[in-house]
Image (cartoon, rainbow, N blue to C red; front, side, top):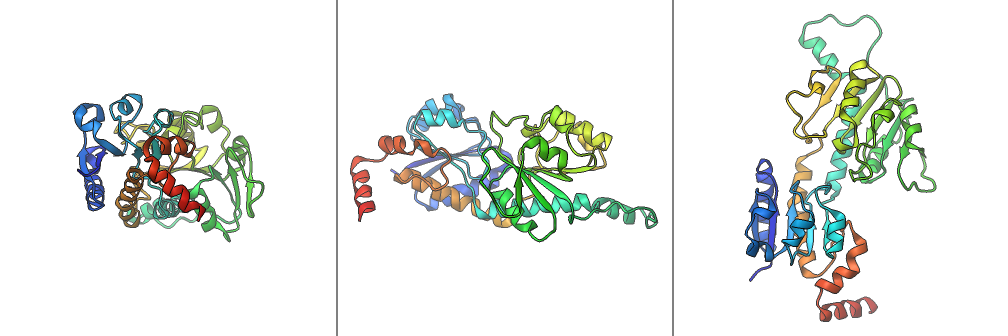
Length: 343
């Protein structure tokens, strides 16, 4: 019987889940797709699952207890904050994501697009034409990137892709990250508060974890440089949304471009919807055709490697790998692998 793979996620992304299912099936595995909570599925079926591919569907201790033979929890996209990393590690289960160059390159391009659209007041210029308003004769609202300080919170793949694209734009790049490298040409690493106070553009580009939730709380948002542009394409839970709304309403934040929110989709009654100096997209702004096409392929590769006894390259809890090998990889296979590595 083929190894069993369970794919779980909301019905709203059913097409993507089905594409992942087709790719995993072509790789030779038996696949079940569900839009229901994992714990609502029959225990016998869950006991047969060797790899779980999940999007948004929460996976914690209870789900892991119900999946005694699961070897890997796989997010087909870059984010995986719905998976309890600590609980997975305690069970010697790998957590793997779907990070792909198409993903972070698309997100970098989209984030820069939001920054430029905000700085150049593209929507305001378009509205002026559509509403048959006269050409403005006073001070222009558009602002150049050149000469600005751009602050990036986080230094992962997307951040680095943004920085590469901004090389030569004559902007000063400042970055805050928990473990800054010693030196990188063209970048200055600073503390978060200093970044907020100095940046004309703030780009939120760090991961959401218990220690980063509400990272930009009310006190920190009040440190923002007056008139700055604020862009968040990472996670809504990183920011105090109520205070952000107040800072946008008062104009301290001149433009806010948000692709993510604390609760998604953004509520119909959210005050952010009433603010004219915002760009709001539904966690989709960087989802390109190229990125979409990579997701099923990488999910199938991750599942095949984990079930086959090879830790996937995109494993996020690499400290678990040795225990994982001891539990899941047959002794003979480990010996063959060790022998091959010595030749």
